Image 1 (cartoon, rainbow, N blue to C red):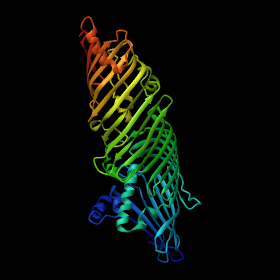
Image 2 (image 1 turned 30 degrees about the vertical axis):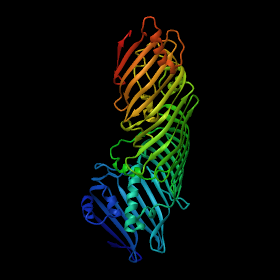
Image 3 (image 1 turned 90 degrees about the vertical axis):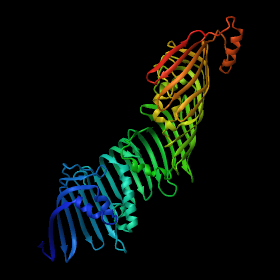
Image 4 (image 1 turned 90 degrees about the horizontal axis):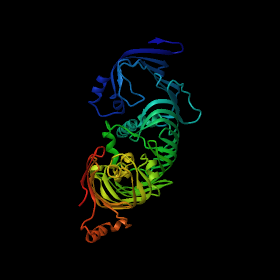
Length: 529
């Protein structure tokens, strides 16, 4: 130490910090907030501390370290490899007997400054603060709030949220509220962030620009990104509620499942009330239409009161309940898809030139275990009714798709069309299609699917495995003989013709379709029977 003028003194300290040894000692004690954060830091590094004193009172405390040879496994943007050099500076300055200023800088990642005042109980609480990301200076705002701004290449918010929740739980148990988040951040926070990649709610968002205002438990946000554009209001008090009015919503990329075990623990908690409307709802680059979603939690279930995806030529509606209070979590949904032009609908969702014209519907009920908007095919069960008329199968590739998977938005590109290319390579016009599909643990059975056209009648039977993507189908093709008969009369017509046919039999071809969807095996079983 060295004396300064006017009863001032400066003390300089140097040393090494071994985080691994420190964490070992802390693990033998009851959990603390300090231990929780330091357990994510490993290695040994040099440090220096400078203490300025005035009349035995600490006026300034400054700690600095190069953090060489230290590894941080904290989520981005505060992660650090062993070989990176990211200097750390922390300064605590007494303004007067009741006010202090904290300054923190971590390389070019973040610079923060907080002005705190002392309460009657002796704790310090923040009055205003600033956190600047990137190589930006930190200037305290004039208003009583915390400002967070700047560019962040990667923000792993899901991991941060989990860690902050654990931190607050430890603080609550230790009854050391002065060491909680409220000791550093004001209740009013303003965000002006440009995030390259944001991991949020199990999904990844790109080029995420956030303008937000947080007042205690209420958030008002304006978001622009590749996946989401619009306004979102979040109220975390009482029955938590999210209200979103979006210009665009694109189904985002899901995060890898590695490391999600902790997140799955929280699936049984109450889900918020959701009131969402998106003018344009996309799956990848495919516009599905306008999306409306209304849902809320009751005592036992999360209830989807309305889900609707509407477009000029189609409308998809669903409602149901998600049993999310006791495992195994399960979803029950009543769904209906109607379209006034099957061909245009399929073109829009990525299947051009499969069907021309046509109108139809698909409706019924489905249930599965797991999350509400991602169908688990091994547990999928239910029943659907298919009806279509006045269309034509045209040229298309040989794949039999999961017609029944429409509710799983992420499976849309493979699950929307029946394919008969190997049988009708030149196209086939149909007047009516009617049938029922029964699903039991991912096995879909065609009960009475019949297709009536001007040139032939089809009777389809068998099953498809929605999980393994295989099929075992029989298709019988009867020539129409120039007759016009509703599809519901096919069976009786065939029986009647069997009696009246002068040759004592009906001409038909029969096909067996097996194998996988990508490589179906089509075998002609008979030509005349």
